[in-house]
Amino acid sequence: MRALPQPKPEDFDLATVLHALGDPVRLELLRRLTAEGETTCSPEGVTVPRSTLSNHWRILREAGITSTHISGKTRLVTLRRNELDARFPRLLGAVLDEFTHPSSPPPGASSDPISGGSRTVLRSR
Amino acid sequence: MRALPQPKPEDFDLATVLHALGDPVRLELLRRLTAEGETTCSPEGVTVPRSTLSNHWRILREAGITSTHISGKTRLVTLRRNELDARFPRLLGAVLDEFTHPSSPPPGASSDPISGGSRTVLRSR
Image (cartoon, rainbow over all chains, first blue to last red; front, side, top):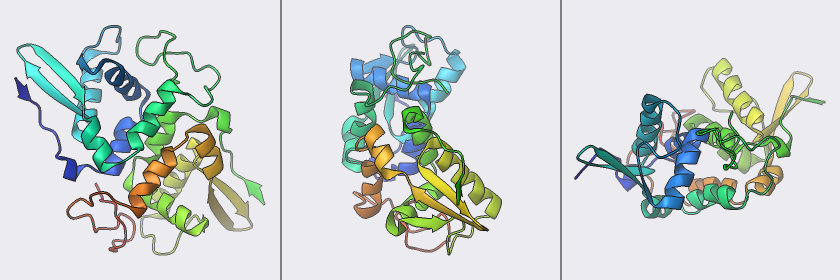
């Protein structure tokens, strides 16, 4: 199993991490990763085009948020939670809070940015 | 004094807020706002082009992070800290932590993305 290139923790950059998180699809991928521990790069129920999804995964990986390991034809993505927490204490926790305890779900917030379902608390822009 | 349009707190969107924060110049504007309470839209020492700066302020305002009030020829920008904290508890605090207690300043982090000085802890991308 080999890993795709990713930044070292000492090279993490706050603006880059925030930019990577600042997209409804990438936030939904983060939510799934947090819930499931790891995911393939084409999680079940995801209906955005494969090339778009690859681009989202790349942005997350290059920001240091995820690791991608390749095993045969499978790409497995994991969250770099400990390294992120060490570099930016409380940041990921504050973002993940919104998934578990949305303080005030905005009106019309039921549209899932990925699958069109009604599960997510995120609003598609 | 009149205010430029801005979203209501119940319309704040996490992805939009994170995207607005995910830029080294906008993070530096946030740092100044936090330190100074309010600022004009052309803070001293800022050397990015005025139109670029206006665009950054617009992105921050439209995300709900700042308010802009116009008085004569002056535009004053303030941080909507209480409203942001109510909607996304701990998020802004986690971001602002990086300004006051950078856990691990990246190498070559001394370049100020706005003025080219050596004060900021942010790294220009």
